[in-house]
Structures are given as C-alpha cells and as structure tokens.
Image (cartoon, rainbow over all chains, first blue to last red; front, side, top):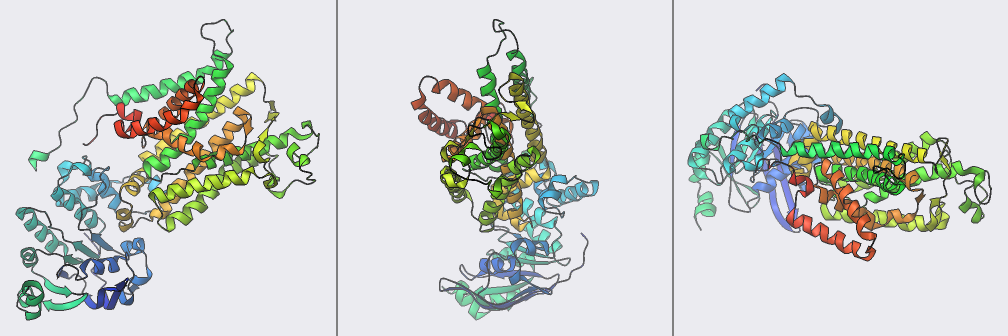
Length: 248
Length: 367
C-alpha cells in the first residue's frame, strides 16, 4: 500500500437536529493523519450520525467538517468517497449477486463513469492487487463464490477488503466485530492496527475488550458531544464515563 | 476455512445453459426462414402463411422492447411501467416519415400536408413536422426523442433518489399523459386515428411481399444487434455495476460511483432501444395510434420479461415470444379472457418461477 498519510479530519461545533431532536450537539473532534481512534458511547450518543456527517449522508445543521483543506459539508457522498474516505457499515453490505473477486474489482480504484466501466479491461496489475487483498482478508479460496454464500464473518472481511483496495486515507469502521467469534475479533483488531499508521482509522465499537485490543486513544460520546477522551484506562476511570456507561 | 472451500461444479453431460443457447439460436434461425417459406407454393407442406410472417414480425419488435426493459429492470433494477411510451414515440417518428412520403397520393391530394391536417383546415406544416420527409432524420428522431424523454424523466427522478414503486408510478403516469396528449387533434399527430394508409418506405411500395420480407429482416437484424449490445454491456464491468445498483445502490454510492449517472445512461439507452423497436413496428403493422401509449401495453411488456426471466436477456426474448403466442392463440377464441390470463400468469410466475422460463434452463448458481 503506497501513498502518504496526509489529511486531518476536523470537526468543530457540529450540530445536527432532526425534527427537534439534537443528534449531535456542538461536537468537536480531531483525528490526526495516521491515527487509530476508537469511539465508544451508549446508544443514541450520536456515533452513527457522526459517521453520516463525515461521509456526506447527513448534512450538519451547524458547524465545520473538513478533511485536509476540503470542506466535507459541500461535497456529496461520491465526491467524499473519491477523496479517500471509506466507510464500513455495521451491517455488511457486499454485493450478493457478485463473486468475491467481482466485489473487490468494483471497489478497486479506477474511473467510475459508465463509459469507462463499459470499456474496462482487467489489467495484470489490477488482478494482482485484487489477489493480494484476497490473501490479506483470507478469502483467496472463495474468489469465484458469490458473496451471498459467505458466512457473516467472511462478509465482514470482504467488506474490509473492499475498503482496503481503495487505498483510503481515512477509514471509518462501524462495529466491525459484532457477531464475530473471539478468534475473528482478535484478527480483526490486528488487521486494523496494521492498517492504521499508513492511514487514519476511526472505529466505532461497543465491545470494550476489542477496544482495549486496539490499544488506541478512545473518545467517549454522550448525547451528541464528547464526554471524555484519552487512553482506555483513563476513560474507564473517568467518573462521568462511569456514570453514563456503568452507573445505571 | 477448509470446511467452506468451494467444490468444483459438477459436470453434467449437457449443461442447461447450452440448451438455452441452442433454443435461442434455433429460434432465430427458424424466424430467419419464415419469409423464405412464405414464398413456397401454397400447397407445399412447408408453406408459411402471410399471417404467420406478419405476426412473427410484430413479435420480433416486441422482443426488442422486452430486451430494452430487461436491461433497465433485470440488470439495473429500474422497473419502468412506461416503456410502451418510448416504443410508441419511436413508432410515431417513423409514422411521421411514412405520412410525409404519401405526398399528393392522400385522399385530399395535398402535396405536403397529411390528410388529417387538411381535414382540420390547417394550411401549413407545423414546425415539428419539418425534416421528417428524410428517412435518416426520422430514424434519428425515433431514437433521440425517446432518449431525451427518458433523460429528462430519469434525471428528475434519479437525482431526487426516487426509486422502486414510486418510479414505476411516475413512468406509468408519463405514458398515460402522453396517451391523452396524442388523442388531442390539435397536437398535430392525427388524434385518435393516428397515422395509417402508408404507401412506401425507402422507395419500395409497402404492400408487396418483398417489402414485408425486407421489413421483417430489418427487424430481425435489429433484434440481433440489440441482443449483442445488451450482452456486451451485461458482461462488462458496467453490467456488474448495474447489478450492484439493483441490489445495493447506496453501498455503490459509497464506493464512489455516481449511481445517478449509471442509472440515467442505462435508462436512456433502454428507451432508445424501445424507440427503435417502435420505429420497426409501425411499417410492419401499417398503423400507429395513441392506443400504443395505453398503460396496459407497458405493463404487458413487463410481464413478458417477468415470464421469460429477468436479468438474463435470453429470457426477455423467450417471454416476449411465448406470451404473445399464447395471447394470439387465446384471443382468437376467447378475447375477453386475456387480461385475466395475463394477470394470472404474472402471479403464477412470481410465486412458482421467480427466475422465469430461463430459470428452468439455468444451473443453480452459488446458492
């Protein structure tokens, strides 16, 4: 994987109001280039809304969202994706009717307009790139199988592979280990640790053991803004965190 | 992971896919022979009547329309219930050319104006009739007008993320609105009578068996070309992008694809293929009127594709020919039953044969 780590994700005073409900409340957050960050928080804390704001699915009511010098609030989803911001959804959404290889081929960096897709020929370099990623995510044996018949864990891996192959500069990962076995969870943590450094990775997760395994800085969200930030030990001992997370 | 390793597919003596391909090529070959067999003496066992040739020519045009629908619906998941409108617009463009060619041979003998305009007391040809005396211009319009309409409707709908049943309703409303508009005499398209009494096309009188054979082969050639074009698209990466739009559009958007542009281009291309089908249909049947815009026509065309098996292309042909054969047979003795049979067919296929007739010939893949 080539490419430098440039671009800092910057959220300042971001608020989102849906029909009077404040999903985000003056949220400010900075993710440095190459940083691995875990975001935790109770249900309804605004984790998913934050991801939606960054990827352009939802527009903020107020505040600044930028990546490097790009103002993300003025870009649509496709433009943001092409900027190098990839998102892994909570529910794996791979293309069921296509094979593992074809899923990765669609994700591969290439001109995406209809005419270029019609004229696309798989070059040797592209084939090797797909094979390398299949190796990384352990799906080489399943290359010609449709995604529909993969197991839950394998679908998650395929989706991570589809993000990796795009060589993103910022990766947003939503609850990657939900429903995974312990062994799969462990290897996922190792994979994400390996990916960060060359690019920023933001992981939203409930599983505190997994967050500990990531060994990264942790941000705790609550009611749409940052409650606490620091190492896992720091936030776990923060009285405010204990109150919202464990106190009830 | 070893437990889940894929097994190589079991080889059977005759792959079902081959049966389907053989059926397709055999069917096209038989179609190609029909005008020849029509020339045999009446008492020959192989003689084919004019009726069979005329009806088969119509079905070929319907099959092209079915291909257009399959490309948009079967691959990209755009269920248009208004494709009959694109077909009819292509037909009207060709009809305008045929009307201009009548010239002074009309009932009123006006050198330029078609009969219905003289009847309405018009003295000048409306501007939108200009240029239709030239065949290439009319053919261009038969493709461009449906394409532009699809572009406009598609652009408005897709950029607003209107999908599924809402899009189907909009396309249905579109064809209904056009039907009402074309029924009006002052639109300048012959009102409810439409166009008929055509005399010639490209210098050949239309009432000869030679002309009928030429039009038949033109339609068959267009069907082959449309099939090859659609197959080329389906097998390219664009074809896989279309399937991805159909199954998980927002996911594809996050991969950086402009799904609006993808859907718009396939919808416009599909409308142009439908327009071509209409342009071939009108000289074959010798008439075009606003009834071609009726919403039922568009729905019927969708049923052909559903019966044949969507997302297969071959299924669209299979469905268009088999449903129309059933219709021709049934309406010869019980025309009132047809709508019930059509509806029942759609329900039966949806419940019992979700992959259509083509599904019967295809190996179960990846499930």
